[in-house]
Length: 136
Image (tube, rainbow, N blue to C red):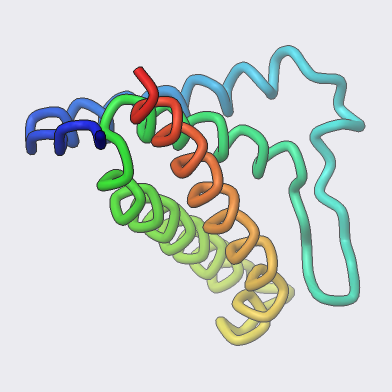
């Protein structure tokens, strides 16, 4: 027997909880974890932020636990929205720097893998949270 489909109100609460927890968890990671754990790893495919993927998976897992499988689209959309905002800010900063300017293509190339891994982490966290939702 499957769990009942969550209402729109439940999806909204799950979205608020996931985004709120993402903001708080990101802030707490900066305070609690040692600096070398928070470092961005540079690879030949771009920059990676491993702790960020764990935080994203946990917070989107909370959304999945509150709203079930229907939260998957919301989680992926929220993660993409955060990445669009991040790349917009990076492009603005790069455009404001008079000594060095990075084209948007460079920013996309160096962050595409990290954005992809963030979306995968959000989907995986939501899926695990939805499994827990279905069992209770």
